[in-house]
Image 1 (tube, helix red, strand yellow):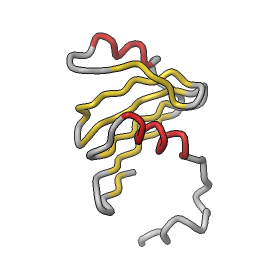
Image 2 (cartoon, helix red, strand yellow):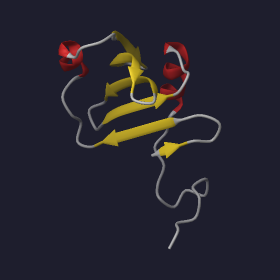
Image 3 (cartoon, one colour):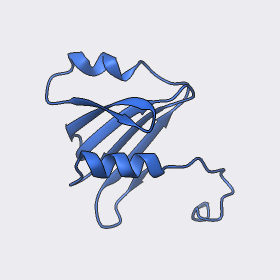
Image 4 (tube, helix red, strand yellow):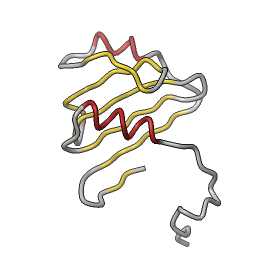
Length: 96
């Protein structure tokens, strides 16, 4: 999902989980290992569109990119994410 309400925010969730975040150690560029909750994560200050953080759970892989964010803000947003169902009333109505 991509949001642009005030600034660029991109969230990608992939199931099943992809390769562990440790595999990103071979990527060129700045990166820093950190955590999101209890999950090991990698912080990438120069992702496409902003700073990013990637982490895995046993069920899924996550990629969060927020324009103008720093590591503490990305961690706060990531830790505040929650799973919802397609009929959640907070979602906008489906377009036909």
